[in-house]
Amino acid sequence: MLSRTADHLFWMSRYIERAENLARLLDVTYQMSLVPQSEEAANRNWNAIIALNSLEEAFAAKYSAVNGQNVLKFMVSDADNLASIHSCFRLARENAHAVRGTLTTEMWETLNSTWIEGRNRQFEQLLNAGISEYFEWVKKRSALTRGTTLGTLLQDEAYHFIRLGTLLERADNTARILDVKYHVLSPKGADEGATDFYGWAALLRSVSGFEVYRKVYRDVITPGRVAELLILNKDMPRSLHFCMNSVVKNLDFIANNHSGETARQAGIMHAQLHYGKIEDILAQGLHDWLTQFMDHIYQLGEGISRDFLVPSTEAA
Image (tube, rainbow, N blue to C red; front, side, top):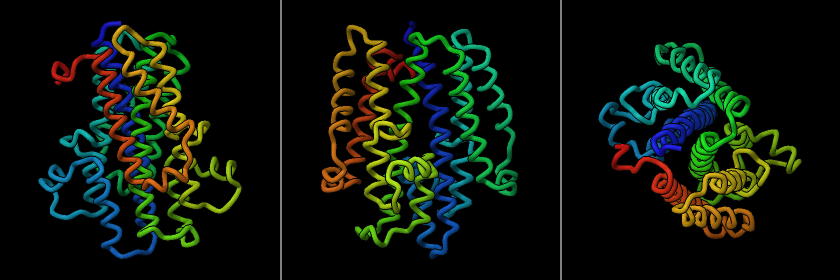
């Protein structure tokens, strides 16, 4: 497969997954903002989203205050913000259009109709109709795209590049959501007996993990178990372990003469998750561990680009 075609497929799937995960992160923050708390505490949660995406300067250039409405507008519908949901869907559609002949008709029509339906929605309309309903729409459109891909695309190299993009983006965003919300919900190392049930339930629902948690643990929600589920559970579709297990498998399918080191790095990350213990991760410090994991995901993405895709300088 041509590296440019692989590059478009890889980034198409990353942008779709990024839009969905951003919707999940914004939704859980919005739901938690409805819990009685000080305005300062609520704004800290919104500021964490901006900081996590390294958008402080871009946000400050447009808004004088960090609050729920400003952050939502910036991250949902701002066309100048390349990290917004609006921009993610636009970039996904542009990448899909560049490789239209590689996609099935159902895939293209799903992506194209998502962009057409969403591009003209004004933020005020979304807010008045209920912003959570919009986030549900984003998640459903992402799921529909994923479903048409799994159900209609030949499982050749194109399929594996799409899956790689999805899984890398999902692992990165699961780590981001957990990193942001774990410390908000467990301030200054609060013990598990003081857990805010509503906050943890909202976090689990943001990754479609509430029912999964109940099935796996059948007990009260605790921070350690939430972290264990989202990091180490090999059967949870949005856990880091599940994502890295699938990354390793997909890399095996597309391996070439240059990708040995990238495959080795992915294997090391998978082994750490496969044999890891949540007690060791928490003892190291969850924030430090997740930061290190996100750094490794970034390096892995760079390795995939170097071995298979268009070089970063050419893509830029």
